[in-house]
Amino acid sequence: QVQLVESGGGLVQAGGSLRVSCGASGRTSSILIMGWFRQAPGKEREFVAAINWRGGNTGYADSVKGRFTISRDNANNTVLLQMNSLKPEDTAVYYCAGAARFDGEYDYWGQGTQVTVSS
Image (cartoon, rainbow, N blue to C red):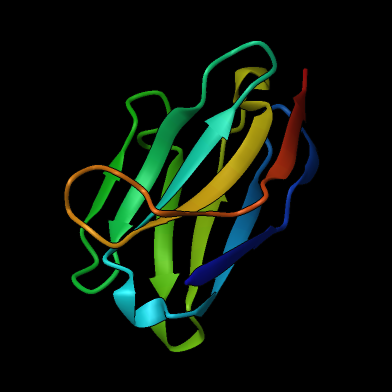
């Protein structure tokens, strides 16, 4: 089993930056992909970004491309999401997730961290 814990959320003004991080523990050798998702009030959870845990390839939702950067620190089992040029519509609970397969499904989830962008 893998445990994921997010940190770094908070309140920021529009145009500002914030970095959220996710620490993984447990059977981390099973992780192939790490991703970030978000869920705004009244909306479904949506994909934000993902990174191949071993190769480092990344992918982003169109809504965050060019503003957000996902990175990994394998030595510390940590994945980071640097968020720049934040917009009020980025306000959501951000969840870290880990996948043990390459089929698009995520097996492990963190508890989430709130990111609020004020206008």
